Image 1: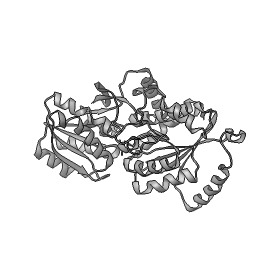
Image 2: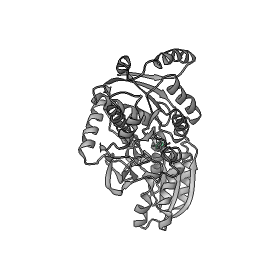
Image 3: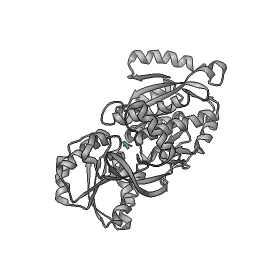
Image 4: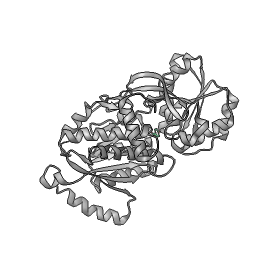
Length: 397
Ligand code: PHB
């Protein structure tokens, strides 16, 4: 398996243009094409606040590919890594280069919803097979849905949706929303509200923090003065480490900190004592007691010397979805209709539990209520079984 992380330079661009022209004369189904490597372009953050998310996704995909003997549909694999930096303004150019110059067969990414919006618009036009292993932008499997676009993660609406019910059952009615103020944070808050407000919940205040800012002192002071029953949050990666530590240091004892589970994913070790006891909802938990999860966590820990998290699971499942498609067409990446058909109906035992896709190509999945105990996200219960995203505006064309 080849690996490289690219920063596109002008020299690269010229070299790639030459290589791309050659590649376009070699149809995948022909003898020489059958030996050509299948090209997987990863547009993920390898720097910045979401770097650990991009690395977890990439590592788990490589683990799955290694388990498959380094081949997909009989072809060897070439991974082309591009650092998205989680910066939406760079996304269109990087996506176009992966498609037109690197001539990738599969596009995998991104992590950030803003990057996803730009990427999906281009992938839709070009018809490139695309797997989103994290970014939750509701539109990807909503108004921007397309036959060639699949998601193995979640829609932003999904993870927090069942949390409202959890709080209301405990008499916690007054909630402050606090999130990174971009697509993902806003849509996560909306998912929570949709499960909370119609059932009697009251949103006292919404506090948006510019992404990727981590100055939380003024926010925490405001929350302390409002004294809500709970605060629902959306933060992830480096920002989640800082928020949880600052919250702990602020000693807001009578207010419960909850959130979409990203708050304590891949960051528990860095958060340490400050994460203990935090409850969140998500489509995964470390302690899930199923054979696929146990085997995956063991293999991931053995390969990388650290614990797996939801991002790793989503990457692992992205690789599995590609395997299903490639097996169905015996490695002929030109046979997109057959590939899509097989991927749409694929089901398997994921570490998160049963994996299946909705008609909009978004996972239909259990959302678990979890709590951090001794540095682990432990399942408390299934907060909502087989939750599907509303897929607003999706018309598969
Ligand atoms: C997103 O931008 O869609 C996003 C980023 C990080 C997460 C979840 C969602 O953990």
